[in-house]
Image 1 (spheres, rainbow, N blue to C red):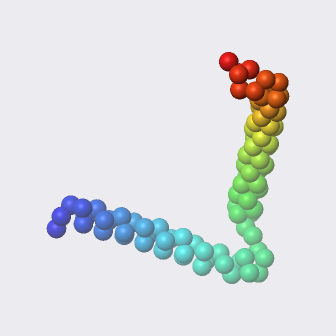
Image 2: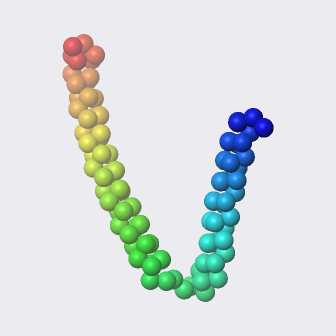
Image 3: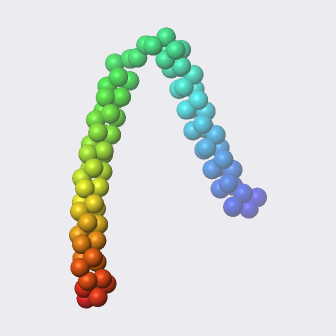
Length: 87
C-alpha cells in the first residue's frame, strides 16, 4: 500500500474519532441542556469564556479607535495638499 494512502487513512480515522468524541460529549450533555441544568464546571468555563471575549472586544475597540485616528489624520493630510504633501 502506498505511503500516501496510509497517511490519508490515518487522517480520516483521526477525524472520525474526533467527530465521535465530540458527538458523544454532546449526547451526554444535551439532556442537561434541555432541562436547563448546568454543572459548576460548565458554568465556570462559560464565565471564563465570556471574560476572554470581553477582553478581546476591548482590544478590538482600542485598535478601532487607533485606526480611526490614523484615517482622520491621513484625510487631513490629503485635504491640505493632496498626495504631494506626503513626500
